[in-house]
Image (cartoon, rainbow, N blue to C red; front, side, top):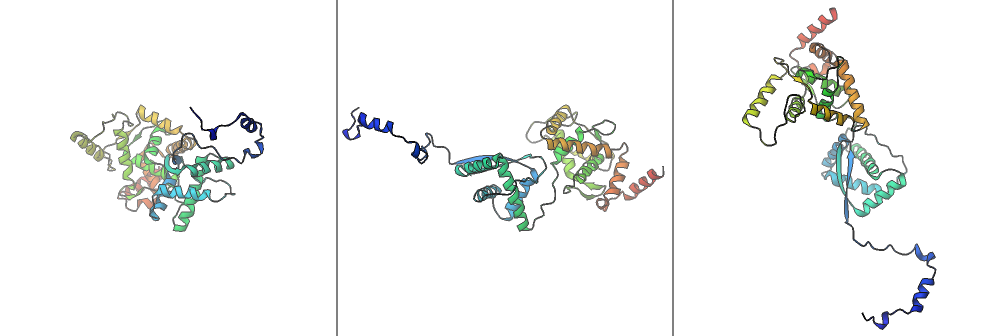
Length: 329
């Protein structure tokens, strides 16, 4: 290839460039462009407590904003200001939810730099900022952020059926017993209650629905996972019959026991984090304290301990009569 005379470099010019000391000006040289341009945006996935995600969504709804965009704006705003305060995480529940946030590549790079300066993983730094901004936003909106939300009912039920009572039994006989034990667990967690006063004391229809869902999924002993798609007429009639028989009228006692698949799932959940291990120990302690051999003793204790949930009960006289008989015996 013929090189134009103006672009030819003599050996003398090459020698001059090679012999020159560039050390003083090296740091001032601009960064070389990337050989392959990277994407302009990137997605980060944050593991967060379920209650925190719900709080972010509630603030976003109040401000008529998408919650992903709100979380992204909080991160960008935090990067504009240096933080000198301690990094504190107030949420103690398991980080069981995911929040996917798209960030500009430059913002993500600054987040990583700031996290490196503070000596923390950048995912954790972003989560701490979001939690702090959520609390400030709730205060500005007049929201109550002190009410703790319980773990999902499915997780509580699986752990409860995996735990053993004082007799070493894990199965729970009867919907009434299952309802009342889950109610006590929720109350002892000091969580925002999902139960309400009903004909037989504290009640939550989600307990019935969750038990049915676990049975359909094959987590309840002697049940088989059903294929996806609309249920057959036979399956629908079986479901109606099962729900009717497990109503709190107590005419039929149904035993709720995890299958091997259910116990395996409970063990995976239990060992997924230190928080879940602690939650399982707590659930088992409640079960061993409250799960008595006679369900009437359990109901009477619930009525006596939580009277606000018995206002609509149609069996108050029977419960009180049983309680007096037990005291006199």
